[in-house]
Length: 436
Ligand code: NAD
Image (cartoon, rainbow, N blue to C red; front, side, top):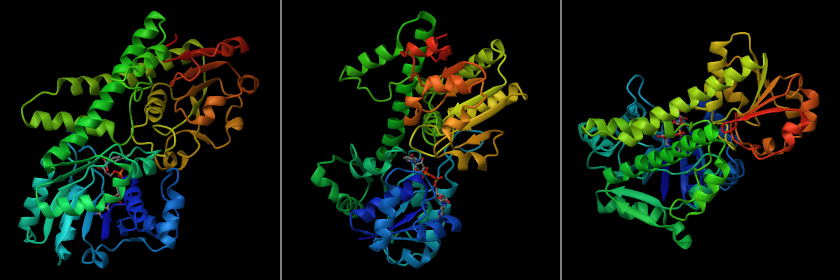
């Protein structure tokens, strides 16, 4: 089977590489010629554990190929995946589908054979129908079957999530697409991965409903954490005990500085919008969106209060990516808080360490001094904010940190050290999302 993937971002690159690992012939195309030039040489544009090895293996055995030119491969493909971005539309929160429709136009302009066109990008309910209308307008309806196959991978564990998914959702309204997509994913049958076959609209809804639920779960525990902060009760014990209940489960129950990343913020907003379009209010998700924004703002205000009370001028952020094991900084809470602090106090000198996200931050032109050496980053700081729970921040040598710093403030946004009794004894003033 020949597969064409449009878009080599986090989803397109991982999906294309994993399909080539199944043994299919895959070409990934992208408009970004620099990205493609590097990918052809096996240089990966993102940080994703295990991806480098897998891309290079499949480049070498010729199962995987990269190009900027869609036309060269389109008419040799059986299945074309759309893995382009669907960001929030400026101003109204609807998913912006311009990249989807442009790609569909490009495909129709050059198409001469029958294909199954599959949306892997996260798109609002009804998008497959709109794609079909566009294809009809471009007189290619006899050549294209439209399907939906939302992606559930998580950055940081994307390869494993793709090769060992909890389920695969296949949304089709015709037998040809259904048969082809089930065959495409048949290498997962050995692992007994459940295949959920449904119609295109339901498939589109499943993705938004899943992300909205996960965002709700995170926000729920963050609200409980606010209560713990007021009452001195222990959020870690609450999370653990709740998570041990099999009906609840332990995942997405760790309190933190609000959800971020490239999916939850935009997908919750889009979910709220598609409900409103149908004249229904999704009260829970509307509240989650508001609450998550408020959590980030309140935390920023609290950090500012600590800065003022302790006359802090120099701050070090540990972690810039929105979560560990990725270089993705889209909607990262660290970046939100850094921008808030800079806006409120122009005299603050902010530094940051991150294992992989610094190049992406530099593109954003943040007013921050960057460190790649953790020990060096401690020198002469007055306050350290633990912002992302990278493993290297779980084993900080606090004796050494105390010696290197010019003051003694720690603010732990991930609650990593809230039960560590040694930190105050060394001389630190320790603040966290749940301790005053
Ligand atoms: P991304 O922004 O990282 O990558 C999109 C890529 O598509 C870019 O490289 C861009 O140059 C390319 N592109 C856009 N239009 C193109 C065209 N016409 N032809 C060729 N290339 C084109 O996006 P992403 O994070 O990979 O997300 C893609 C989709 O998958 C989104 O809808 C997202 O919501 C969804 N998704 C993302 C994740 C995730 O963890 N990032 C997980 C599941 C689903």
